[in-house]
Length: 259
Length: 109
Image (cartoon, rainbow over all chains, first blue to last red; front, top):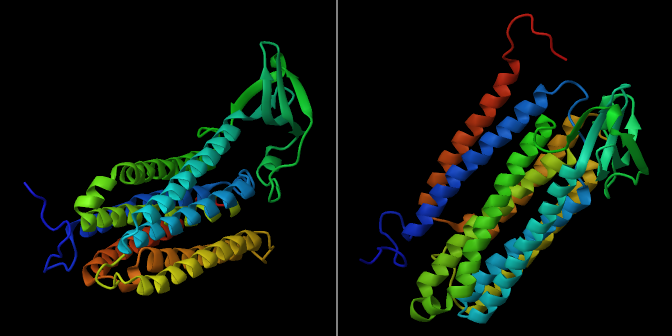
């Protein structure tokens, strides 16, 4: 059975069906991310004075990822424009760049996640707090690259610059002196919880979008030869999703990295 | 990406491609400006938040209007988006409204 209105325009909507479908889907996505942004606002406003973190993420990495996603957005629209101009090799070229951008984005995000999972806050039995990145952990000693603070509040407004925190020396802490040790994973603070939720969901969208674009890029030639208009519409739909992913990041970047 | 409004003549598309490049440059400048503005110490943090969100909204408008071609779409799409904006605004309004909803004698910061 042939799927109707994949190319031809429906009289009542003035559009081919997939386009109505993707916009309805994107509308539901706006509400999904909207609910999470709403949670972010409530968590932030509900945090005790001075206990909402500033500077826990490295700004230059977030900026780089923003530029990577913007670049992928223009290559996506150029890939579609190439097909409209009957230039299939142009489509292959631009979407190859889109895919490289998607992989780069995910690599940078993975590095940032790893950085959070090796970053530890260690409360000592004498009340001092050591904060830094784990280098080595044995049964007797924990070695971190970090510093001591006397008040936990000092960890929340780090005044880190564009290139992240300053380099600290190595600290060796005896395991027997440790009262509590936790990494900067989702359970560390509500900020980390909402950061991992928002960026994790966004990363899943990047992976999903990249897989679709890869499929069209790698296996699309046959359809391009037999039904070029339908193939162009498929590329358009995947492009609309990809632009939405970029659009979400445009808000995530200042909200999580800068404010 | 409205196919109703874009002819397939290469010279017509050259005009669109130039526009995409302008939008790309504007988005990069917007990103740099967002980062720069975040290091300015305004009288209150609320101003920093407002500035960042205004820049982000301008960038989002550029992506939606030109890369997603919303500037020249069909009425049906505007209808769907109208409902989305209504419910999204409602969600944010309820969120902000909830700030004032404290039980009596609640100690706030």
